[in-house]
Image 1 (cartoon, rainbow, N blue to C red):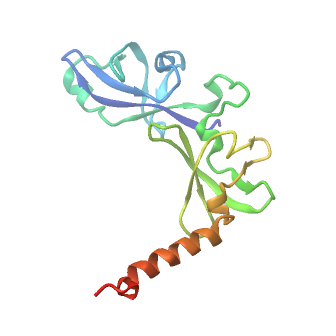
Image 2: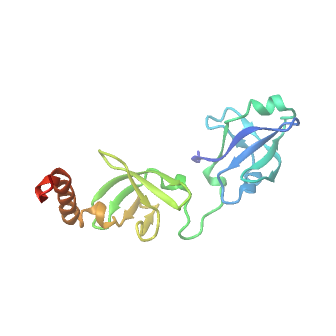
Image 3: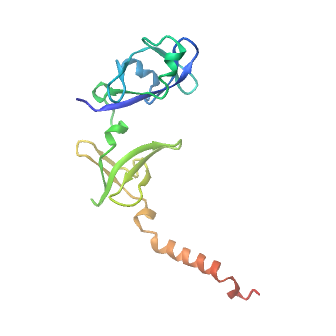
Length: 193
């Protein structure tokens, strides 16, 4: 069976006729109308979008069989999924986030970094989050400069670490830190009373 991809989340009820706010996670929000029946992650419930229209930053949608506000309110927070094979193929240098999750991350020298944990976008571009075998996760820009190679068939991404993470600037930043600590620790050595 094809992997399930979350394409939308149902929000609050809208009006009294069963409409809901629908937050689509697709490039074209109205594409959720064309994926066929949408299901919950466990597959226990199926939904068909009867109609949808764009609002400010979401869709206003109605589902077949949901005809009043009470039924719509009970759907708040439900995530909607489709099998991965129902989604259109991507162009070169385009990826579904779900296809990247779990890929091995390696440096350009071939050293293992960990696995791709998530792709985020906080408003200033995509960020790739990498979980190393131990320690804190790495959050790096998901750009061609930092991630020059995405090899989905090979199960890996190649990461060009920025200098400060890789340690190239470690000595100079350590020297700056020691100088700052010394000036903060010893203000009276300069002759001040």
